Image (cartoon, rainbow over all chains, first blue to last red; front, top):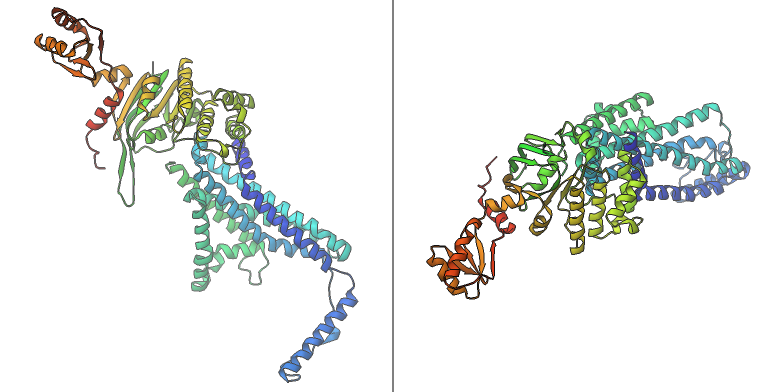
Amino acid sequence: MNRLIGVEVRRFTARRLMRVFAALVILGFLIAAPKVFFHSNRDIAKATVVERAAAQRGYEDCVRESGLKGGFCEQPDLERIVAEPRFHLTQLVDIGQAMAGMLIMLSFVAGASFAGADWHHRVVMTTLTWEPRRRRVIVAKIAAVAAVTCVAAIVLELVLAALLTPAAVFRGTTAGVDGGWIASYGLVLLRAGSTAALAAGIGCALSMVGRATAAALGGMFAWMAVGENLIRTGIPGWRRWLVGDQLEAFVGNPTDRVRSVATAGLLLACYGALLFLVATRVFERRDVA
Amino acid sequence: MAPVIEIRGLRKTYKGLRTGPTVAIDGLDLDVPEGGVFGFLGPNGSGKTTTIRCLLGLVRPSAGSIRVLGGDVPGALPEVMRRVGSIVEGPAMFPTFSGREQLMQLARIDGIGRRRVDEVLERVGLAARAGDLAKNYSLGMRQRLAIAAALLKDPALLVLDEPANGLDPAGIVEVRELMRSFAREGRTVFVSSHQLAEVRQTCDSVAILARGRCAAAGPVHEVLASRRAARLVVRVDDLARGVEALCDAGLTAGVSDGTIRVALEASEAGRVTRALADRGLYLTELRVEEADLETVFLELTKDVPEEVPA
């Protein structure tokens, strides 16, 4: 089994699509990191002057254009405006949560296309003539994509953190970075990694059932974009069971959280396990032609 | 000696939403003896590939039983497949790997080492191009790579589905030699093909499949003999007088392709020589007419009753 997983890992990481995804994400980091670095500065007084002047100018423009005073246009309380031009290292938590969404989508596509390509190139048939125990084959495939995407998601989050750290250290602040923050950031990384793994596994499982990448992508799009939105608007009481809301509750920081992080994660894991069982059962009974 | 492949009452029906059920194999019984090259013949759609897929556990039979190398399929497949090399419907490749890496990926599944990979690459003549991406290989090279993959496990049974497809004449000869050399080592090659000339030259035994049923099976010469009326080929300088002499002697004879064909068992060839000698005609050739596999194949596949509705 370990050999089979090793082979699947090797094949998954050798895919061109994986390299393209990794290159695009890192390119995005390389563009964003210098921008954050140069936008961040520690001259709070100067930044506050600029911000107050901008607020006053906005008010004056409003008055001039509307012809009103005091009613429609609100006089800014300039004393209360204090700029914060520094990049805070603690912002990595929010950035990590935002990036997790993108990593989940990329992982789903990577997992789906891996299994879809295997069907397209008839590699599934070749593999079964070497390992006829189908349960092992599908478990190895899903385990491989889940493990690789989990590690890749965490590594990419850490790469981004490493690229943004100079902005905080040299032109921003590391205030608030303590044991508690490190623990909470660690949890963000783990949640990003685990949901990326789950998404890749689900993509792979759907492709194994549909025997094509398009089946997985189309099925997931139809469910998330159409099915869940219809339920969300038509039967609001069911919202707390929807995949999208669980993902938001588990990885993000929504204002109207439907569940706790732990229960959302548990529910996602249950959904994933159910889908894997169905995919395994279908694959075991299917004619491979 | 127990057959390496035993198929009893194999039936496979595919369910089609629009077309309704289609019977691909309809009660197939087949024994493949150990050793030698066994040809599995049949026209397109006769069920050859479905049978091979059933043998390898890729397709679930609707009814019947299969034993391969003494193990039940699908129950004993994990043990059986360690001793079976196969190609089903041409080579299936991992597109991003070189030829050697393709084989390495498969070898790792069974814990086979790199040395064996190099051996099989050498054996199929791909050692020099082993580092090239397999997707850049010609069809013939891909076919050889697939054969190399099938040989990796050092199998007791080699199952090949149309292995000569896409190969040039030199490649076809190489595959033929490979199959024969494999058989000489005491192993069994089960090969499906529609290239009858190839089968005639390569196979020791054949089974002819038509519409999912076995129309004939056994050693090649027996299958040919069973479907061909006995005829002798006779050549004399004066064909017209020869025919006249043979007919006067009570034999059924006629001219065809510059020779006289006489409907007679080989054991009675003396009647021919006597009849001709009595008229002062002397033989330049006398032989038993060789059965033509193509003709037998067409006869057998034509005779099978229409498909039974499922």
